[in-house]
Image 1: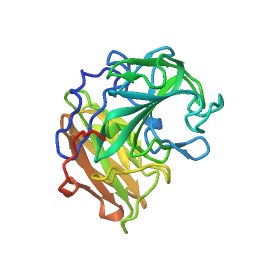
Image 2: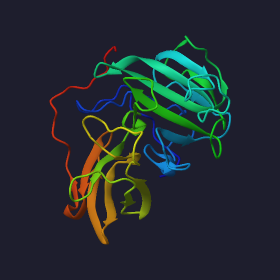
Image 3: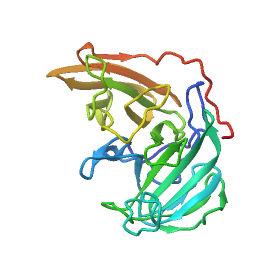
Image 4: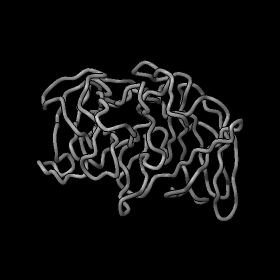
Length: 283
């Protein structure tokens, strides 16, 4: 996908009772702000560490913005080890506890690898307020923003996939999938290729690595690709020496869902309704 994006849908954006696009982009719309394909939620890198957020590439010193209103509860080094530590893998980081929750649970967002922090603990911020500047502190290979969504507890083990929470650009959508073997067990690191038929341009996605990440209660996904212009795409994967291909329609502002079940192939169909309404509520 190119770096250009249309303006975002307004927040909160909930086109169905099961969606929760509550957060604005933490990088301004006039900057390239699409998560890096190889560093999505659930990706595996750095000695088999599973990625608990998304990495958004941006030049050093790009402003980092609050994704939603809330209170700053951490500003500095040590977010992972919960104590001042300049060797902390998140580097300089900010945590916001948001003014709204989801399913009666609190929501938090994390902004990591900053060069500079412009807010203080206890400070209230609004959507779009500047938190600091993109940097390369902590465990990084170059300047970028590491962004996380946490639900329930402010814990490394309580994250959710940010691409199901960040509001999409107008006219664009999201693909989510549950990737299993033929017996119905989740598969780690299964590659899928998403092809735009007119341009034949490919995007790549992998199912989540093992441990440290969590699925959405409704979608029960283990693969997500956000920021996809609406349209019809080819979805393909290889399993057991067999290629599986189908079409998937990306709807504007919506999540398009599929399941893969090994030799039973790919099914494009929404999950069954749980009968619960998901809207922002005070925690």
